Amino acid sequence: MFVPPTAISNPNPVYPSVASELGYSGSIIVQLNVDKKGKVSVVRAFGPIARCSNLNDKRLEAIRKAVVESAKSSVFILATENGKPVDTGIQLTYSFDERGKPVRPEEMGKIRDYGALQGRAKLLPPPYFPPEARANRISGGVKVSVLVDTDGKVIAAEAVSGQPVFAESGADAACRARFEPANLNGAPTNFTGIITYRFVI
Image (tube, rainbow, N blue to C red; front, side, top):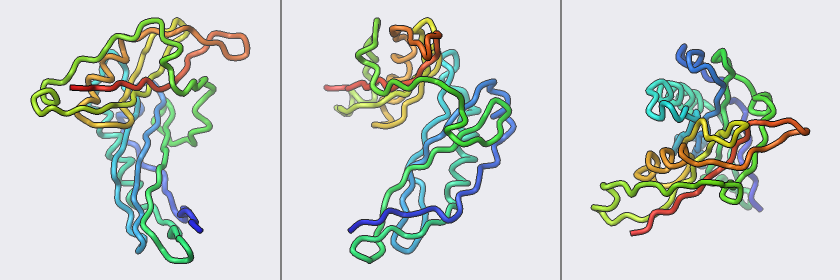
């Protein structure tokens, strides 16, 4: 029987001042590995979601770095299988508000999350095939998290899984996509979701 790890200590990150300069709230997803001795290592971190007007915003890397350092200091009760400690993966989400202050993800505001968005697309331009991937004959995919405004226009995008070589191309294509507008309790609302892109040689 598998028993997942339980967090004993998971301190809030000390967000850099640039988090308050963005003008919007955000979340960072951190994938960790907790080995059977309790050592925590960061596998990968995604977010915060980048404005389509500035996909290469250097401030986002500083925010990710602060969160990764905090995640590394987390302490867990070990995962076990049949009563014995085992290595396991875990995913944590850290969020900050418009002031750059930590908040719980559920306090981020009411934005409708549609999950997979392909079915709502009115326009879904294909991504370019990165020259590096083509030269090395790399195929694969990437999932891009997007924030869509009340008119159906993508205003922010960030690759959240898949091969890094396709991340920039996927986010760029996502920013050019258009979707059916959404409502929440009868009022137009921003919404989030995932676009999946596949790259095949």
